[in-house]
Length: 112
Length: 113
Image (cartoon, rainbow over all chains, first blue to last red):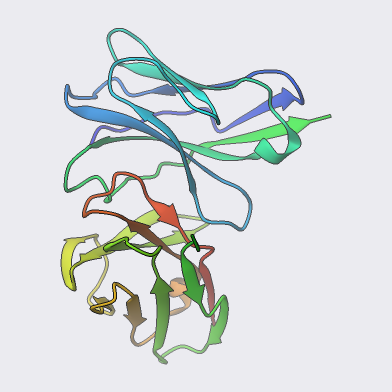
């Protein structure tokens, strides 16, 4: 699986958009980008995933660059409850996908 | 639909003992994966079970083992506990082997003294 690079921490004011970047320059053509988050003392929670096109769901938007070497997770209106560690993961969407490699993630702190 | 449940939530053991952790997946999910989370190593994949068979395995010693029952419930066992085994053990379930959408439980926090 391709490795990912994320900033260790970010701050965001409540109500503003949080843009979390992720570099995955060695991603292969059939690997997906997944985002999970882990709120303190809880298990990770799936947020969104994508292959080439930008994706949006009720939680967030995922923007993937045309060369697929990087992506950005966007929380459009961050709240205090979005304070968590966000993991960007690249993996095949096949039988090995559950063997997800979680890096160190980005610790997002949402403040008043 | 009930989420993934793990028991016990907290556990204290001493070195050399063994421990068994339990995980009940979301109803209808047939795959169960186990992860270990420590401050130093982060989240690390232990193994995955599907239809009572181990399908994927991480890089952990043989002291770590698991099994899955016909109702998809899973247990993991750690024998001869070491101080370094202190961690949060997370179980995740998914519909099929390999996910890709994993639903994690709250974890079992194990402290080895």
